[in-house]
Image 1 (cartoon, rainbow, N blue to C red):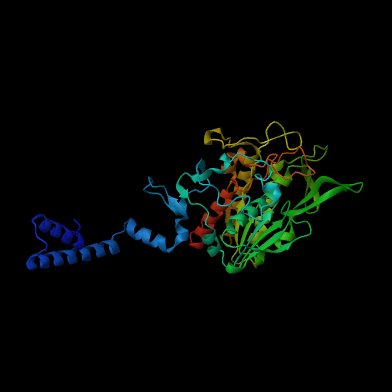
Image 2 (tube, rainbow, N blue to C red):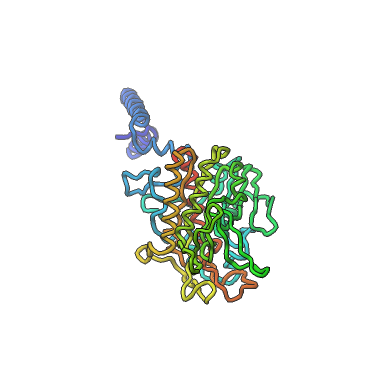
Length: 433
């Protein structure tokens, strides 16, 4: 039973007014008894809050640390635990809230991802959010992200899809502060941005294969085929690791071509070469060896003391009615349902290979390094509606649809929702090995 002294006094006043009186009278003896009762109940309530392990105390602790409530257990799951929620298994659910940014508000958005500028009129593909099965993933908060990475350096390492994620993150963070563009290479593939108020550096480091890859040249012209040295790390990104606090590594799309595989300087096989006397080891073999080399290098990096590495798993393409160079398109306007998604095929194989190599690196490294996965494959297999298609600046490539990269804004923004959730776990000391 709860008492409130103002409420009780008001009831007494009303009682006397009903009897025609203009004043209230409270028996002093009853008032003393009431005051003692209120003090006793108040003292009991304070003890209850301090010592009873209930949700009131838990919520107070969470409010003191806003990063911990970025992942919320489901309300109907009494045993839900945000620390162990699988963020990467779930479904897309309707969300009528528009994206945090638009193709007009984000000044750094490249034309190649600016689908709205190049004629994409439907907006339904923006009205979905990723919902993990065991918890709720809150929307991206740029201020929270920048507080976590204050004074640090983060790099996306990989191909143009790695850059696609960086471009999404840049649009999101620019809502809090406009960054300074401080570096780009001669081909505008590697870029660096700086957020002065947070002393935060954001980079993308271009690497086709993570290892040394040399394009074969015939009669002075590039052939499109590469010699991949599976045991030689690409120093363009590896040399920068000691300087970084976070590295999100990814690659695979450049493996979908004729590549010759070398180890110890000797040709051991190929991928998609179809040549006599050369063993075609297949795509999965090449990807496995490359990520094994990369993760072994990271584990052995003596100067990478506080580095957190996340391997972002394979991002699927969605060409239908052909391939990229044979009229293939991606014209869908809504996600696939979970039961419509096939967790098989090349995309799922590459994702499995990458996760297996992450687990191998964890065991071999004996937790000397923080290595984890940003497992986006399942979620993105459901999003054939999120690609530019023919809504991009395809000057010089007219007639080709882009069903590999992702519109901005678009489903790829969920990758950074997930990235923030993972970094918040790590920041609160609960990073999962």
